[in-house]
Length: 407
Image (tube, rainbow, N blue to C red; front, side, top):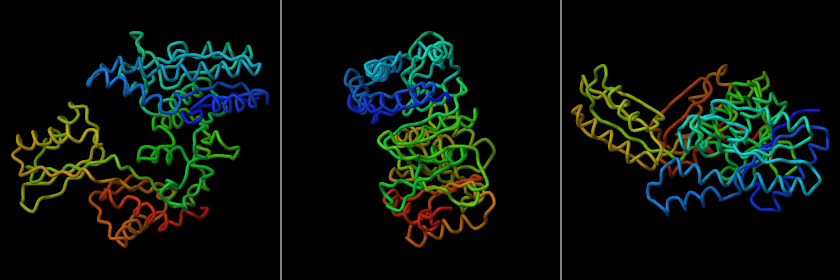
């Protein structure tokens, strides 16, 4: 008998028919002798509908109230699934984040989990009850409802699995697992049987939307075994687990892309200590997350050019900050590009193979794609390119590393 946490995304609980399908899967696991804890997202489209209502009510609704509204989505789906499970003759009980209790900080709409209490869940499991937990939500120390950001139900599930020391955390979604790249733009994309925590963490941070990055961080920290699979298929999905020798044989495991990128460059900045700190302190004060940063020497001695990327949602605010700081520093000008994207290759095999970067750059050059910025780590290389070349770049890199073949 195993203790399994199952998480079902919005498309899996989009309507009553699909909720009944989820209940059938849960029942099968329970009747096989396993203890099962279920985490659910809001029904597909519900979070967007609720958010739209909030912004129709006010152009700047308080984030505390946004969290109160958004949390109702998961409340409905958790109660509905509990009702359906009960109709099948199973004992089920729904829980909201504050009932579990999932304690978070007070960063509304993007709260981080501080602790998880599982006494009520364990008591239910011991009595043969299936707990159905509303994902995406928690409670701060003031007793206010908080939400964990987009994809937060993944994080709820992994945090519960870690606290319960579960044998497995199954993430059910509308895709059959983790692919070498987005199958919607590359027909050669191949489903991976296994991927390391480290690779999955990089892929999530670089634009892959299968798992929320914080859920992967939790899984990696607490060594929670993950199985990403489809709720519409009986096929095995992708196991996210410890790195092994077989994984290292493949130089690159996947290609990702992120079109939510913009680029800002400050030209002819004085090249002296403290200048970079002045710019990025100002961006931090404006609560702007900076991704890639590159500083290069200017043609004129004593000056440098500084470029960085931010999300499209932060572009206007970041550009305003950059222009203000540039004026204070006496820089020449501020340049910007909104239509850029980031393409990346990821693989633990990079640690022990040479020539990976040259192969990537050659593949892009062959297609006439200019690289604007480059960032690397032990297991990834990212390039900023013009957005219009994104799909071409993904397919070219997928071919360059023969990702359609088994490693």
